[in-house]
Amino acid sequence: MDVLYQMLCALDFLARKRVIYRDVRPDNILWSNTGSPDAPIYRFILCDFNLCEDMGKSKSRLVGTSVYMAPEAATGQVSLTPKFDVWSLFASMVWVYDAGGFRDQETYLKSPSEIFGILARDSSQIRHTEEMSEMRPEERASAAEMLAKLFDQTNPDTSCSPASRLFLRSRPLRSSARQASPRRPGSAHSRRRGQGLP
Image 1 (cartoon, rainbow, N blue to C red):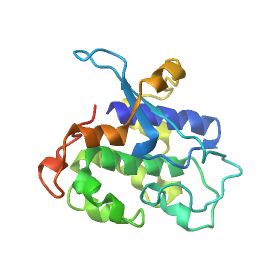
Image 2: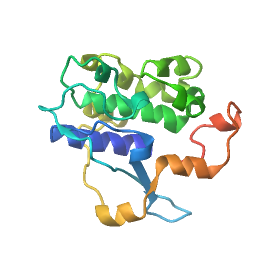
Image 3: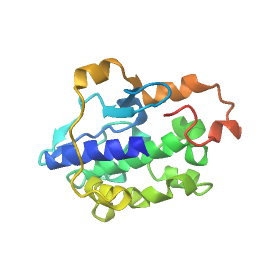
Image 4: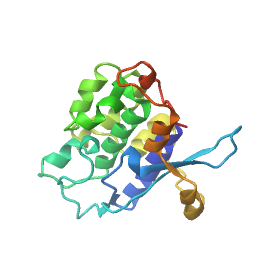
């Protein structure tokens, strides 16, 4: 849950600054172990802020990576809110837990709603994040609401260690899963919870 907690803190911080990140996905989450191999302390940070926009200026349009984009991105009718990022974090957590064998099918998915077809097989590992997956943004939980629900925290600590040192020692979340062990598509081994992840 470290990755979920730290990413919710990051998204809550951005929401308080009225910034929408617009591209939350495993490739943009870096991690490092700031502890020791025997007593790891994992730190997660967002990188690649190229698609960020001010909340008042961000219009619903196709940006980011399709399977991680919130449903409202395709409508073109509403201004985006920070809840766009909450959906993307939900989809990223589906990837982290490999719920329903998501990683094997990720490249074939064309829309956010297709995630639910995969989760119909097995959603037990991410059931605690269901409020993040509401199709309508006005019904979706905010990062602050999820922090309060899951971590009983109403004022998250958004301080971080010096970013430059942390960034230099960080690795992408996706590459660490690839390096952990080769996976055969559809195998039970490939669906093991959090395989290869801190």
